[in-house]
Structure formats: C-alpha cells, structure tokens
Image (cartoon, rainbow, N blue to C red):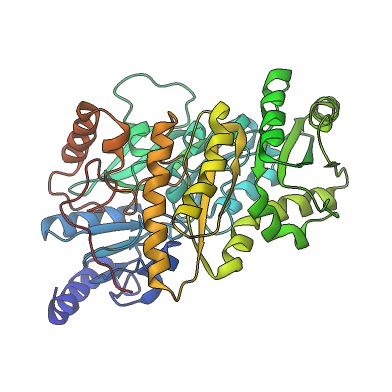
Length: 472
C-alpha cells in the first residue's frame, strides 16, 4: 500500500479508536518478533494499540470491511515469525489489555486480559498462595494472549501441562468483528464443539484473543531440583528413562547436551566435572514431606551412573539453578552471535537418537549444533549456531532446519512442541499429517476467516505458492 494510502488508513483508524491508539506503520518495534535474528522483519501500514476488547472488535471490523490484513501481536517473543506483518496490513497489539477482571483465590481462578505479562499473572497467583503453572522461558516478556495463541509450554509442562490445560474460558474477536465468549469460570463444559480449544494454538489465524478465564492450584509448599551430570548422551538418556521406570513423578525433566553445557559452563552455580557431556535436571514438588520424599527417590535413580549430582536446598541456590537454565538459549546465541533453533518433539524413547542426529545434521551443513529442552516431553530445542553477518550460514541453517523437521516426522514426532508453525514452518503439516487432515485444517481456517485477513500467510498446512520475501 502506498504511503498516501497508509496515511489515510492511520487517519481513519485514529478517528475510529481515538488518539494514542494508532501508530505509524513504520514503528520498528512492531515489525519483528524473536525471529529477527533470522532476518524476518516485515512491513505494516499501521500499528493499532486498542485500549480494550471493544476497541479490538472495532479495529477488526474496520479492517475486515476494508479488506486490510490483521496481524495480532502479544509480547513479540515467538520464534516462528507469527507476529511479523508479511506485506502490509495492521499490526494489532494487545499490550494495553492488562486488567485482572476477576481474581478469586478461594476458588483458584482468575479472569485476565490478553496483554497481561505471564510473569505478572504468576506473581499475582503466588501472592495469593496459588500457582499458575505454565512457565514458558519468555515469561517475563510474553503475554497471556500470546501464550494462548501458541499454546505455550515450559519446563513444568511435564507435570502440569501446557497453557491450554489451564484455560477454562476465552473471550475473542471473530471476523468480521464480533466479540464472542465461550466457557468461563467453570471447570467442565462439553456443550458444543470445542471452540475454545480451536482458538488455543491457532496463532491469531482464526480470531484475536482478548481475555481468558484461567484456573490455578494451591502453590506447592516446596520445590527441590536436582541436576545430574553424565559422561555421554547415552548414559544421560538412560537415566531419563530410569526416572519414568521408577514411577516417581517429578514436576520437570530437562536436559542439556554437550554443546549447550559448554556454552553455559562458566555460569553454572557449582563446579562441573570437566568430562560432563550431558545434564538432566528434575524438580520435585509438593508438600514439604512429599517433595523431600520425591527428591530422595530421584536422587537415588539419577546418582547411579552420574559424575555429579547438584542438589541445592537453599532457596537462593535453587533460584540460581533455574536462572541458569533459563539463560541457556541466550548463552548458546552468544557463542556465534545468532542461532536457528527449532522445537521438534519425538517419543521419549527416541530422544537420544534425535539429540545425536541434530549434531549430525549440523555437521552435514557445516554448522555447530547443540540441543537442550524438555526431556520428559521429548521436546528438543535443536539449534544451529550461526554468524549473523554471513548470509550463507543462515541459508545453510534454514536447510538444516528442514532436515530437522523431516527427522521429527521420521521418528514419529512433531515439527513443533510449543512454538507453533507461524511463518517459518509453513507447509510442514503436509509432511506430518495425512492429506485429509491437512484439508480439514485449511477448511477450519476458511470457516473462521473467509476473507483470509487474520494473520494471513501463517500456520499454513500446505506449502505456500511462493516464499514471502521479508525486509532484511
């Protein structure tokens, strides 16, 4: 759209939504997400920041009436280009929808708007003796609406489940601008087709989430982690399977391979053995008695072939361990300045093969590789480290990611465990699902969005006819 048309669009939207609700389309902060290091930066005609759900509905209605694309945006922490405007349109940011509409600690529930930062909801829960379990790595920046749009996970999804498991009701805007509510402050609802679950994980392609009812649980009295170090991947993965076989249920089972350990070794809150090549982190939670019992049993299981077991019990040391784990992605990025990291999932018994073959794929494309992730869910963050100033390396990394997706399917897994499809995985469902399932996926999109204006070009089941060229 030409500059004159963009100015006219901004003027019309400002008249509709009021001063302060519309920014120029070239406002840089809204044109990329966490895939920016892969040169994914788009172009918008306007940025809309509505103050409430009713204004979101007005904006969607105006855009639908004028055939203008709508790109919903949360905290911009996604890794698939899902919040990037491909070729103009209106970026619709939910950042001003931050209200806690209801908080009922005695009933373990809350209703919050989509722009609330995940960590803020977790803090509000904790202040009331409760736990909101979803803990994506980006929780200090990500927003609840974005978590819902991608069905975000995190380390403790092993025991507690991903975001969708904690959502009992949604408010969202459907085309051509209708504000709809399904579910609510109820714990059961099988009255109709599960529209709530269709919206969860839909990445803004079916509608725009504006608020959610979420359930919580009483906060565990104690949480005691263990970090066990092993000489190789085989021994470490055997220890993970031994945890399953023990019948003990940890809250989290994480892993780091050799490359990710080396990237983070200097920051680990204890001295690591020089020959440590694999790490397993587990968390035991519950009442103080339960946590201590589970902790002891996990310690016994993990110690057998371990080089070292780090078992902090002091709160400061426990927090230091999890901060270190949260920093793994940043530390790996710092090795060469950039990375291409994908969130494939495989059956737990194929985890070792997936870890080893990630390294092989990197070697085949002449790129250093490593992985870490949520071992209990078979969810790897398989990563290729790149020099951002070398376009050839980025291209090789993109080809490596394609091989990685093929590997996930070969091993009976999925191309995405928690990041979604967005732009960078368009067409991958066609390799993972039968054609009839992909056709159903596309039919659902058409039913919700007949004009194709809601986050167009994202979460496509079939490959797009051409690859969209974004700004670099």
